[in-house]
Length: 370
Image (cartoon, rainbow, N blue to C red; front, side, top):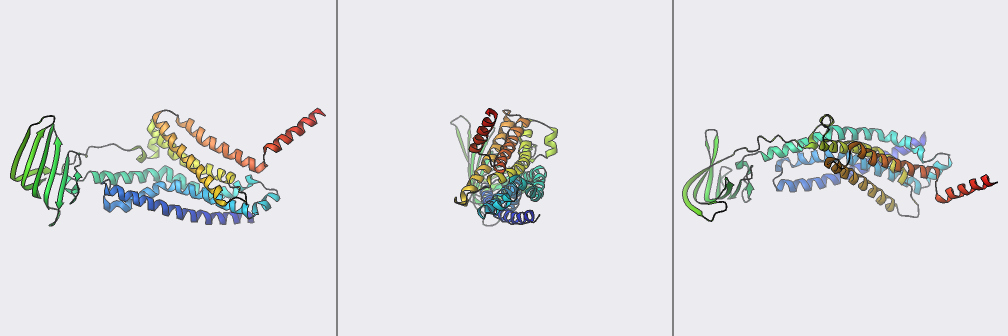
């Protein structure tokens, strides 16, 4: 049908423009946040672009759903304002007849959202976690940045080097604070350099002072030295086998149905079900009064989108804590949203109104009494 073809073409333009705008906004916000995390030592500064790309890829199911939702509302609202929907209604077709052309356009998007939510989302989260762990596993020497206090891998040492004028193997005005085995030490030196002895790495300090004290005691031992050697570069995180739940494949979540796994699974499946529901909700909420500004309908639709995703995130926490069952949450939230959207759509399709309902009821009573 010509009308179906025209509405899909307009919807494609609206969806594409919205997708470009939302992706650009998310990339900008993600870049700013990733730069902040890199400055705090969470990621390697050279991996900022990679982390940003993986993060945006993890957000793509939500971005695609929101773009589809806004595209449907923008297209249908424009048709209401230009009285094209009046022609559609006078031809004997209602709102429910729009489901077929819209789902015909949306099914490739829904298929991509499914693949992203079930396959790409855990993979991108795993890549981000791997980059973070690799940067955390670097040695103490690699952690030292001139002019910044840096914590060692195990959190037991704090290093500071004022400047590094002759390369990474040498620095001046070195400060090291250590706390381990009930002993606290503060070591300062005018200079320091890296020394390799066999397979071990040492930091050789020159012309410095060392303060040593026992935890909970007031005794303080002060010693001066011309040269002092400290072993550095021990990898204390090598035995960390913890795997975050959001990095686990979907098949692994299905095999091990623990509350945290079911909570993560509810989020991934919820992204798919939410995308389907928003097609129905988009048709239902797109009716607009020409006398009212177009922004009012869009603001209400965005509020609906934010509320839905907040409930999806809240339900994930409830399932993880055992307050809600997996199937109960999916049925309550997504089933309830579908029923609400279908009733809203039926309201517009059949032009339900309390006055019409009361009039038809009165007519039925009069017929029965006569």
